[in-house]
Length: 328
Image 1 (tube, rainbow, N blue to C red):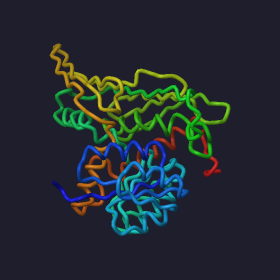
Image 2 (cartoon, helix red, strand yellow):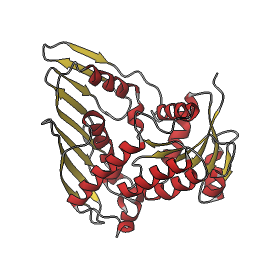
Image 3 (tube, helix red, strand yellow):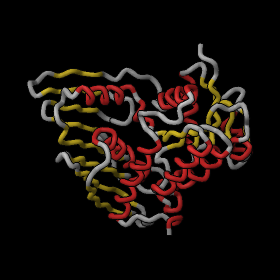
């Protein structure tokens, strides 16, 4: 068995709990400590994980010399300050997606990681799932021919939930950064950064986007059509279409999912879903590999690519007129 990899969890909300629980599939990944904004919430979180130390501040958490890495799970407007706190304390950081609310903040985080000579990775967990590894393998083989079309959508009926993180401008609310990040990151993985972006959106009465449609145009002639919606549940599927065949990823494409390759001659290869758990643990395993190897980033998703993705999101927000209070 591998020696322990000790995690410090920064923030104690729902995604932090889901990440920590998914680590239980690995015997050597330990939820060693949690930091929260109050001792009560830290204690409540730590009670589920034997041996977990509960800190009532993030400063105490990042000062814990026994930790191998920090997982930043706060709402995205706080990612930059929380991540800088950990990086400047010399801690490798796996930071929840989106990495920040804009590219300028992402560049700050990348620079701080480089200055402190520690690893940084965006927790875009879909990138690290087994079926996404298979997608990249198929694309690298070029059996699909030239890629001309990518479609991906992500819609959830968040109107059934009162979580202010989705609705409040001050918390970076809206469909784009919470849901749209998945299709947009997917398009970047498949086709890279677009040559041109065209975007439109509808808005809630609180001033955040309820839904958006984004078109990426590429020099090759390829297009990606990417949609997000927090008012209704949508198919949440993805397709990649080439001149010789296509990949179809079933609902929910950014979760562990089944998929298939369909060639133009009708030959079909099925890849069934065979996965237990949430899916958040695979990124943790990759980050462990990065940290233990002495590397500072993962080739699956580098900080430089995360900055480029944030630049695309900045352009989308510019076109639809979405500005957060911290940017005014």
